[in-house]
Image 1 (spheres, rainbow, N blue to C red):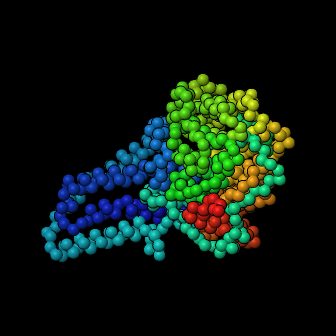
Image 2 (image 1 turned 90 degrees about the horizontal axis):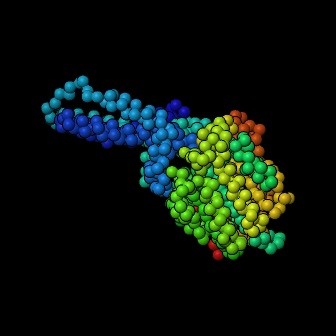
Image 3 (image 1 turned 30 degrees about the vertical axis):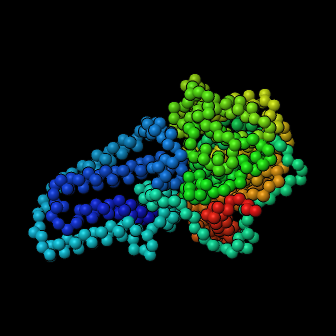
Length: 580
């Protein structure tokens, strides 16, 4: 890791400073001018400090995303409305980062103080010009060599970091300036690995699912609740009494997993059964306008009114744009909330008030309806209303108080919902969008950092309860809902129904594909397997079975290769729907 880190550090230094090498060593005496040197000093100082600042950002931001920030961090796409209010809050909460950065600035400026050495002017001649040109070319060659990462056949890439680190630790090898420059202005383009022929691919994995219900559609209403940062590490610990109680009356997937690490990944996964298998979230990628056939369009065809609610600023996370692509009839954000009394000062409307608004609004919809709501209060900076300060357990992590507040807000929502005529004819689906940054121990592995609660609650069916040991993921929600509601359809889904005997989960982070099947977890870097573990008995992933269980490795490799090929080909070619 130290060697790999040095290679990537030198690469970043090379890319950033090639221009300064050139300007310092151009042939001629003008470069010895004090004004010219001062200009170069200020430019060098400014440019390098900007890139160093991005590393300081990732000291904390990495805990949320699980990967180094890319150019998307600078553009803050989808967060234009929130960013001005969030920056001051982040600077206050993480006060030690700006202080550390200021100290680095001061230290670097002192080290760049005026040189004590006097550079004598050289009488220019053909020989001197030739010498200066040679020094320039030699220095530039070293700069290019550093930038490309050595004398290898190809320049180093972000994905090559897996060769220097253990699973889940490639971000230690990388640095944020390098990651930003490598993604600067680029649009993610998926490769087509061609592991298999089309016939072989369809035989191993075919994402086209056809549901064949045994009876007529139930026409139940559907409400999907997406809980901000409610990872497994934040429930069942005493601060979510309502949710814990509701789970005992629900069909609960004990081994539930998110398909992404950030909020923007959760909506395509949950609504359209599309996992996040790219470094750029689907919603903000070059494929964001691809045709999708998810729950909104399927249920609309069944006569459902469809709507999506998110208490943040309209446009946040590009959810409103994706809702149009996905086929929702209505989008309700902060703009649609009737007043500003419940504004939390940064993200949007507090959960209690917005969930009440959500309940009131869907109560006006004709049945059957499909409505989804995405909570916000358990997002950093974890603000709760002043009137509730001290009411909820502080817990062991800063997020726990706001988790308790959202749990209370859900209790109030259900208190009102139970009085509505639509309540008993509704299927409620709960999922977290992703885990939080507060995970410890088993929640820091490439398995644990995706563990979330997922459960189905039907108040009219007391028999639809229990705990499932099945591996279940966000992209499994769509086919499961279709089966539960007896809806006949033919869809492209990268998940599977809760009724299916299949037991797989797939996620992607830090250039590693994480594939779970049964009790086993395989880490695959896109070309080869790098780890195999029995994650249920070895939650910290300490015993690598890659060489000990070759048959299991081969079987799992076959599937994940087909899965990746299918995903890349269909996303690249806009084939996420079943064409006539």
